[in-house]
Image (cartoon, rainbow, N blue to C red; front, side, top):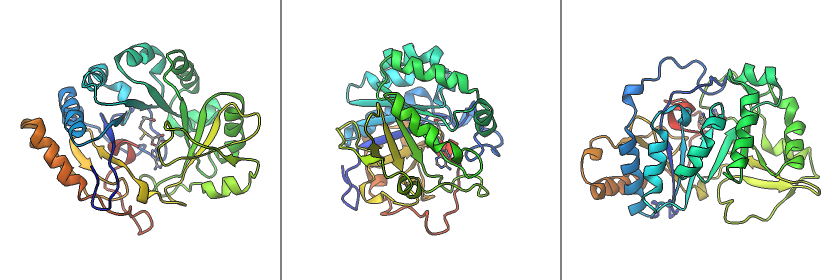
Length: 313
Ligand code: SAM
């Protein structure tokens, strides 16, 4: 289906929990409790996916919070997979639990995963996220072993925290067949942190050249590479280059709201409709998509009502 601005909406992002095993300084650190009771059931997520498929959505990403914390996560994945309507079922994870779960995830239907990786130094990683860098490395290895590829590593650069590691991250893309992506910091968390502009990273590294992309690369990231690189360097630049005109996505929060735009506080509850038929739910989602705003409000002193862990990054 298309929204009111003629954008084709094909991509659903389900935030299956707002609970997280990490506490990233720019994401959920100051968050208090994350009530498990308000999370939708596995059946409800599968029903939303079924309804979305009826209106032409064909890609789904499972995110959070940390999706692998949900004990019934495999049930959600296999439920969506058994609809046989999604050509792409992907996962965003901090990889703290990935090694243990990778085989079951692949078997249930996850075909690729994005892994958040904010530092390549043990101490700095722990300081930024509260997590264990070595577990991330083991998770990345497991993702390759299970062929959940392409594996994409997502890095949010913060001034004074990990911005001196830019070239080390690019080196990872030179050495290994992974996509290392720099995501510009969005105003969704602690306002005291300052991000790094992707424009500046590129301007300082003229050896990085744009690459031709296949169908696997339909998102907002722009990819670059250089001679001898095994992987690519991606830039997701919602702040320096908004990509609203090509936005193809909607988000569902773990407590059952559709958020048509990450950078706009409007949300619409699906909870009542979840008790009715899938067709009625699809009609409601269709009507909500028609209300998707033309642009995000990041440049208009945007004040978020939810942190990223509550919306699904
Ligand atoms: N727990 C999973 C993980 O760490 O990948 C999934 C959820 S996390 C919210 C998804 C992504 O959102 C992460 O890559 C994280 O770095 C990114 N993120 C969180 N807050 C952000 C912000 N304010 N600006 C840009 N990206 C952000």
